[in-house]
Length: 122
Image 1: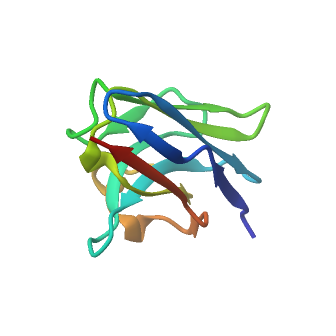
Image 2 (image 1 turned 90 degrees about the vertical axis):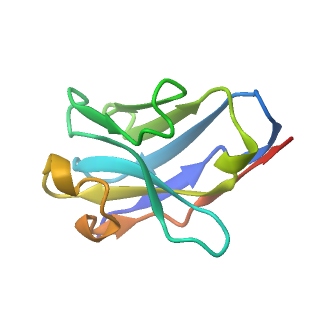
């Protein structure tokens, strides 16, 4: 079974930066999602197995960067210029196939981490 463990969340102020990490036990395509209280899980960014292709939600383009270090078996999400509306639990997820049109769909992913809380105060 794929193991995904997120870390790096916390409480920051608007405009600050934060880097999330997710250690993994597999070499599959990866993504970050967020889920705010009372809302559905929402796509943030995805990256293929070797890091040559990435895909971002419009809401985070230019502010967030997804990357991975397969030697360290770690996925990252660098978040800059954070806004209060970025407040959510952030999850990493793994998918066996890369289908660009399906990467934003949570149902495309086979494995999920437990999540890490990010809170951005105004």
